[in-house]
Length: 469
Ligand code: NAD
Image (cartoon, protein in one colour):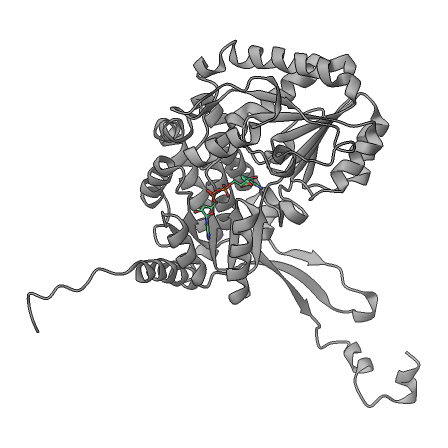
């Protein structure tokens, strides 16, 4: 053998195949099925987050200029709450449940057994790069799976920090991080997984679903879209404006459940605009560019896209921008009456995913509901009204992933509630029990004992007596 010959370094394909192979070996060993393993992993993830808060917050500041308090509230805090809730109920979430069987089958017993699916792939986006990577991991671990995590390449500091920490805390064979962008994702998607959990945009979701189909792998798709809000609560104008501005301008509008536009009657447009201006000043001061609490756009491509949306728009509040640090001020635009004009501006067609809130004038609640139902099903829908029948009309007559009444965002972050989209905003849901179920197969186990063999009545020969049953 030539001693000078070095083996060539593994290709990307070989490296990624090896990662999945290791995870599968670990799953096949049976270790991840043990409740003690699941509990230990969740506790380790808890420690990872608690012991590395400053490093994670610094990474979020670097990538998104996300304020440390906001990072604790909307990123690490959400994952820690999810872990605490899951640990508290782990036994209940995962234990077999007895199932009553029909009288005609008696005597017999039935059980529902949740079994882990195997090796799960979690592909996360950049806007909440910690929460949306690690909250699905909580459910996958609680259900007893091995997991490959793919953080977003658009938040490289967070990606590197997570990739460095995960093997220090978690079972390094069962939980692995693959960093990278489209090439790495494409290679990962060539592998066979037992579940793929994707959060991001609808176009890539189709790529993921197509690749998953090749292996008949089930998918959860957590997508976005244009989440509408309805406003007619004149008595609480300022409170509503403050809540709307908070939900919209958090993370500089780069939140999948942020209100995308507000439907209201034409006579309310000016009052709402003025109240939004007051709320923005309240939250971020007279110059939000100087507020440490206001974020930046993730990259130049998204900055240019958002500035493009403002082209020709009627800007009522904000509109200032600084390309150098990708700042766009909290902005409110006045949309034309959608039923009177044929020319729909781009900001009404595309998901905004940035700090631009449009106010869309419509005649009344029916017109608003008609506007919403004529479009793709959104991830969230918000209703700000003092009238119970209006609230219920939106709940009953529209379809969306979730609904927020009098407050945005909350429905997405509560560990006991399923979070997911419908139609174009996604399929499947997670958090708490719903996460465990997403990453489990629920199998029916039926036992028909031999004593009192009533099964004979269903077996040939079908005598005259049996035919009468
Ligand atoms: P992104 O660009 O970070 O993409 C998401 C992931 O997909 C990344 O890990 C990326 O590497 C991977 N990816 C990109 N191109 C790929 C390809 N061709 N093949 C395979 N993988 C690929 O994030 P994004 O899509 O810009 O995220 C924003 C979108 O996500 C918005 O539409 C938003 O509404 C939605 N979103 C939804 C939720 C939710 O929970 N439902 C949460 C956040 C964001």
